[in-house]
Image 1: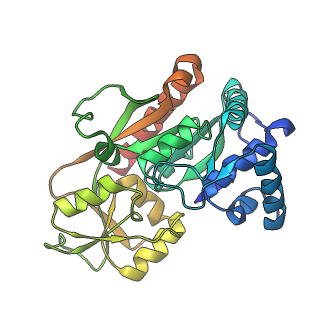
Image 2 (image 1 turned 180 degrees about the vertical axis):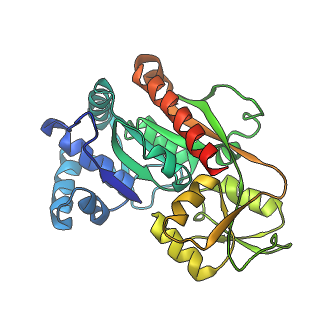
Length: 304
C-alpha cells in the first residue's frame, strides 16, 4: 500500500504525545514494519523496537493471520481511547485521514486539508474496521463491493445507510468499464481473461466480471501504486476492469491504454463510510463529503 504522511496546507503536525499511536496506525495500514519505516523515513529496526515496546506497554494482542474482518493489532480499551484522542485532534484542526482504492485516488488525493493518503484495494469489512478503530476518519468504498456485504440493502437511488455503527453516505456514481491495451480493438469474447484487484479485496468487482462470463485474473498483492499496476498489466496484456478515474492514473504511467464502457451500462456508486457517532459530532466531516462530491464531479466530467 502507498501511504505518505504529509504536511498539508493547514500545517497539521501530530503532537509528540500521540506519535506512538501514529506508529500503530501506520503499522495497521501498511501491514509490516518495513513499509511503516519507509512512510516515516526511518529504519526498520527502529520501528520494530518501538513496536515491541508499544505492544508490551499497551498489552496488545497481535494477530499473525487476521481474518477478513480483523485488524492485525487487536485494539483494547486503552488503545481505543488513545486513538480517539488522536482522531479528535485531527478533526479539530479539520484535517482528515481518508482511505480509498486506486480507483478513486486521482480525485481524493487533491483534497485539502489532509493527514495521510491511503490508496489500496481493501475489502469493505477492513475499511469498516479501520474506521471503527479510529485509524481512519473515513473511507471511500465501491458500491459493488458493499453490495456483497449488505445483500439487498443498497438499491438504486438509496440514501444514507447504517451498517452497524457506521454510516454509508452516497457521494456520486462513476461508469464501469474496461481498460484495454492498444492491440485489443474489440470487446472481449466469452471466457476472456480480465484483470481484477487482488483476491478477497474487491469481491463485487470480481462478481461483475464473472457475470459477463469472463474469467478473473487477480492482480498480486504487490500491486499498490499506479506504477505497479501499469507494469503488471503491460506484462499481462489483458483488459482490466476500471473506471475512468483509474484510467487517468494509469495513463500517467503508460499511454498505450484506452477505456471502453461496460457491455451493459453499469454505474458504480461511490460511498463515504464514517463512524455514525463521529458524523453527528464533527461538522468537518460534512465538509469532507461536500469536497468529495465536488472533486468526483469535476474529475469525472473531465474524462468524458
